[in-house]
Length: 286
Image (cartoon, rainbow, N blue to C red; front, side):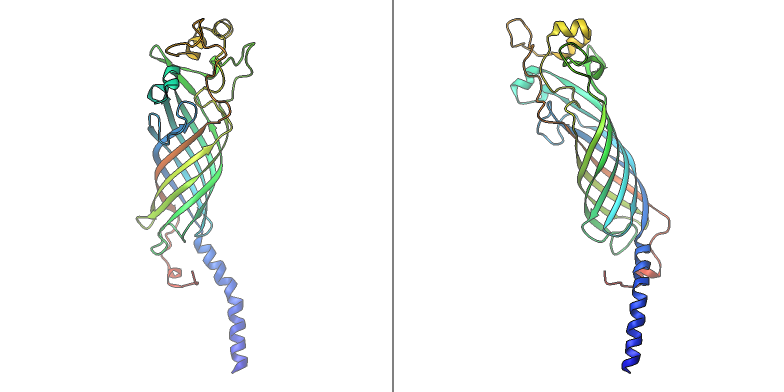
């Protein structure tokens, strides 16, 4: 009898890895989805308020690979327009500065998600979970400002002296960012799930709003970058200096880099078969 029990135990030990492989294979799934929501930024014109500025519709699409029930890898493409204005501030210094902008931001990202609970799209038991995410993204932006009813791109104008004898090179309109945040997943049908997600993006630029350093001598801007550059560089209601300019005074805070954010509601669709087979009836000790 002891020998028989030993053989059964040995056989179970041999089968255990096979059962584990079967479970891992079952856990893998893929999905695609659409996102819609809004975008905003934190920077010189909106220094502290989350969901501040003029909120506009944002959206995109994503592909998610789920190697198991706790980890997902997601690739996404998002678009959002961020807008903010000094006129909406409670800070009188900002109100007097009187700058405003809009910026069309495009982002491609890859990120890892960690589910707090076991979760699989289409599963009736592991059907929801909060999650955390972090990753790496590349963004493209185009800050603009309005002048006499027309919007102009600000980066080519060098409003802080970029491209003149008093400034350096023009800033880049693309770069890397680090997205991170949290979300919630829940299944609603056998192959459909809803995701709610909010995340911040750490950047290494201070020019999402075209505001960073100091005011440049408007005569230099006028001669070297053109009249439009000089007009958009200083729109203050009351210039501080006696000569009627703000030349050399603070325009922004170069020590604080800009952040941007997306908040979205998404619908995702499972690709391939739904997990409704005999494996659902086997408990592997989850």
